[in-house]
Image 1: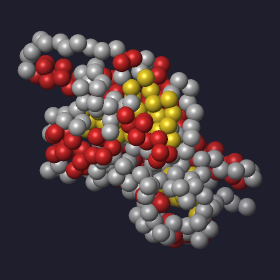
Image 2 (image 1 turned 90 degrees about the vertical axis):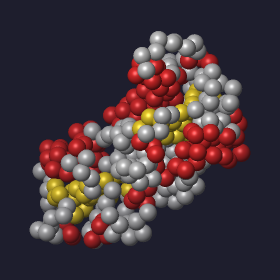
Image 3 (image 1 turned 90 degrees about the horizontal axis):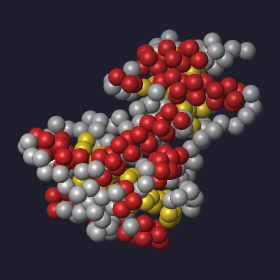
Image 4 (image 1 turned 180 degrees about the vertical axis):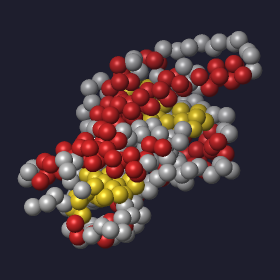
Length: 321
């Protein structure tokens, strides 16, 4: 019996997401399975058993009547969950060491950037001013991580190893060694009160949409060495109220921010985020997925599934992650 086709559907023009590169990599690891790059007019939709996707348009996956599993090639599944026509088959999220390590790199980089006063130092360099300020130790700063899943927990452990005090908040109870863990709505205010640098790695769900807003920022610790709280969002753009972020940067409720994600991407040219002096902006590349690691992960999952074993990291559609 022939193997079912793996359809690759990628809606992106960025260098890391070139569809032909992904197709070539899947062909190298899928053991002779046909890999079809969509759109493909010569493809019989009934032959497609698996789909590897990134930001498919609503309805595109509904065309395959024999689909058995969908593999999302990035960490966030909110775009897929918004598709009302999505086939009722297992939706698998990416969970590989490569992606986790890259996200931890990003979080640590930006925490250290704000902790070590890089915005001030780079401004001093541009202005040719030799005026070093007092540098507090990492142990004087609490980093609060919102979202203690695979990505958040790993970042929290590494930050703790660097000497920061680390707190974490999640929807359900979690335990991470060396991290003060909070959970649920009743404990979020206590979490915010001890947080100097807020790192958000939450999934985007109806419950978390817009959670990064003025009410949250106003509850962050006002007595840290940084002078004012700092926001780092490498989760999803829909988590943030962007008008509130700009207003809070302007009035000092936030001292600085690093944003990797935005409600509209690419970011419009007229956005104030591009030029705000208290903001570090990156183009949604905090944990750019590695084609080799992810394609091997998908191929292994398919092989396990066809051998009768369960798929790993299947999204709970009721929770949205």
